[in-house]
Image: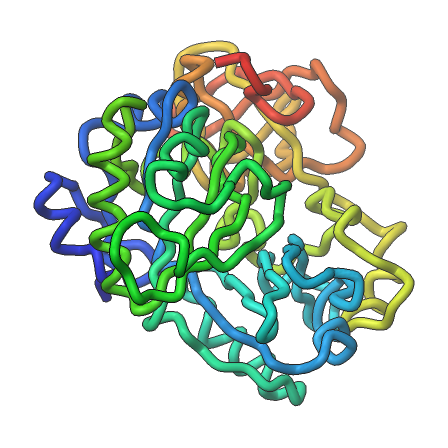
Amino acid sequence: MKTALYDLHKELGASFTDFMGYEMPLKYTSIQEEHLNVRHNVGIFDVSHMGKIFVRSEAEKISKLIVGDAKKIETGMGNYTLLLDENGNIIDDEVFFHLEDGFLFIPNAGLHEKIMKWFISHGIEAEDMTNEYSILAIQGRYSAEVMKELTHFDVNSLKFFEVAEIGNKMKIESNARIIVSRSGYTGEKGYELYISPAEEAIKIFKEALEKGKKYNIMPIGLGARDSLRLEKCFMLAGNEFEGGRNPFELGLEWTIDWGHDFIGKDALIKAKNNVREKLSFLKCMEAGIPRHKDIVKKDGRTIGKVSSGGFSPCLKKGIAMAFIEKEYIEIDSVVEIEGRRKINAIMVKPPFVRKGEC
């Protein structure tokens, strides 16, 4: 599959990779250059491979399928939540927004059909609009400045996770429906644009690159998107949720509103005091790059496995998230990662890179 911007990515010299069935730009120049440009300046991403599902059901009904309480999310606001199965394991983590005409859910790439079936099987009125919408993410220190070049809407008025309709406030001629949210997956200030028809995103992407030259904007591929999220310890569905994980194992219990009933709640209550492994954060002490499924050892004993690993352009060293047996989790403890080679690493508090450290 290809997004509506595929030909534009080719014109811009992108190298492509297959991601969840989509041909997506991996990089345009280099992953490290694109990564650092988002941290220091601003970048624009095509993330149209993410799902887009519009839900028309009332908030009370929706709340039964998510760990948060949709009734508490006012119109114009968004929320990060989890969908669980009956065993309390995570099906998907999603952002959703409360719009004037319903709720917009953003499933992870490749999961929109599964989530649609889940919604419908539980009596939720939903419409899969994944192919009708593009998503552009403008992220970085100068993201607000670039947005001001594109729209008359005061983007600085948006608080984190707030959302607004700005289709009639664009500076370029467009009849598209354009929704903007103050959100992102990089740990930097940023905005995400949901655009329909999907093809309308092409001229907005081009305009952002042109008007953003004064802010050193760059198109950014999935390679830097992954390293950016890893530095901030943001989870990737296919990695951190692999094999069925519950919120306690991932440190995501803060997303749960225990004051309402939801699928998986009873199982979670039973699991709360039976957590064997938890997600931990490892910074390499020597050269080497950890990879997904590398083994973690302590004193020769296997104690865990890497869920996400890679090179940090900001720290100039390897970093990893790994599920570690709970009794071995201790900040500053040294462990060994075994993959292509053995690497000594130290357990640290998240995130790997804090605001202003790069």
